Amino acid sequence: MPDDSARKGHGTPHGFFTRMSHAGRAGTRVHGFVNPPVVRGSTVLYPTCADRRAAAAKRFDQALTYGTQGGPNHHALEDVICEIEGGRRCQIVSTGLAAVTVPLLAFLKAGDHLLMPDSVYGPARSFADGMLARLGIETTYYDPCIDEAGIAALIRPNTRVVYTESPGSHTFEVQDIPAIARAAHARGAKVLMDNTWGIHHFQPFRHGVDVSIQALTKYVVGHSDVLLGAITVNTEEDWRTLRSAALQLGQYASPDDCWLALRGVRTMPVRLARQAATALEVASWLASRPEVLKVLYPALPGAPGHELWKRDFTGACSLFGVVFRPEFSVEDTWAFVDSLTLFGIGASWGGYESLALPTTGFITRTATSGDLGGPAVRLHIGLEDTADLIADLEAGLSVLRHHRG
Image (cartoon, rainbow, N blue to C red; front, side, top):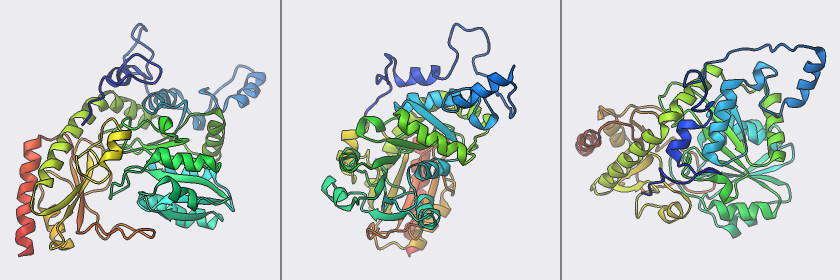
């Protein structure tokens, strides 16, 4: 796996570890505490009526105008996320799902058409099939492994957004984002991407993405105790469209949560590097096991999507899927997961703790079969010792075999 800890950043001579230590802070030669304080508030006072009137023009800036428009903690976190993604402006929102829904509402209107990958995050699919459909916006799901000609053929005159998520939720298909972006832009459509898995390993705006979405709940916060999302753009026009929608929808994130995200991001590079290294070792071990049909981890040589991952990504996170051989049943995999002692059973990922989640039977597919060849489990690798995690999984595989009987 590439080590990009010293990779040069967006307009700066410093590497990623250094940038995450210093971005969104006052600096090293400023008197005061290292971490900025939590600033809570709703009402902002003005010296004069003229000053308050002038503030109306600052809703697109990092200005202190009213609580819902953000304060120092929001603005510092926005700066850090722009540093991570290589974008110009960022909107912090209350959850990762809000980071999905706000830009869809911002860039779509009644009568528009949306293209969405069949592997998309489940709640995003529910939003498209539910609220967007009620608003008169039609969604077509496409094979996430589609090529440039294929996506071009699906674009209609009223297609306004091509949504992407790479790798895909649960099934980890790596999309050819540059090819999709070329086809979309040739027809005037915006490209939105859920880049939560890629974090900083995939630079969306260098590959043609217009709007990048991240669930900061994952590795940025990193401790499974905050819900938060971010939407990043790279042009002033897109920023005004996005920002207007966020304000009109009343999207707001707690300053306390922003502060915790700022705290988490300082150690994220170290956590992420450790977790990714462990994940690759665990994934390699699982791929060698006779019970396993395949491992869905793009960073693993020979895994589906590895060549595209190698071309476009500089690293990986610690989330992947395991597909067991078809002679095992879904109930066998549940017994496997139930037997694990170091892996919690729960949604989300990106925290310091390992998780295991059965996925077969919980995935909706309409454009593709979704057949992986056997029952699947999604694993998130935390900060535990590698040997301990492998020992736990090995004991679980024994249960899997015996449960099959």
